[in-house]
Amino acid sequence: MSRAPLPLRQRALRLLAAREHSRAELERKLGPHAEEPAELARLLDELQAAKQLSNTRYAEARSTQLSRKFGSARIAQDLKAKGVSGDDAAEALATARASDLARARAVWNRKYGEPAATREERARQMRFLQARGFSFDIIRAVVSGAADEQ
Image (cartoon, rainbow, N blue to C red; front, side, top):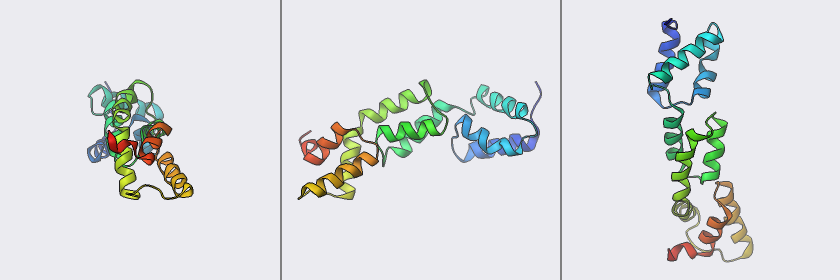
C-alpha cells in the first residue's frame, strides 16, 4: 500500500479535523496540491476505508447546520451541490422533512412574528419561506396560522 506524500495527507487531515467534508469537496480542495489525480484518489480511498471521510456523516452534519434556517428542499439542493447524493443524503433529508413544520414556524416567527394584514404581505411571507426551501403545504400552514393549533 503506497502512502500519499505526507504534506497532502496532512492537508487532508487538517481539513477533516476542522469540520466534515464530502469526498467531492475534499477532492476539489486538495486537487491543486496533488502531483497526480491517481495519488489523490488513493488518499481519498484510504481516508474512506479508515472512516475518516464519510459522505453520510457529512450529510448529517450539513443537514443539522442548515436546518436552523432552511427547509428540506434547500438542504437537498445544498447536499447535491456539495457532491452528496442518493443514499448518503436520504437519512439526513428524512430527518429534516419530519421537522419541516416546526422549523418553518420558528423561521417565520423570527422574521415576522405576526400574521399578515394584507394579501401583499402574505405573499411576501410565503415567498420568504419558499426561498428557504419549505414546501407549499408547510408554507400555507404556517402563514395561515394553522400551525399554531398543532
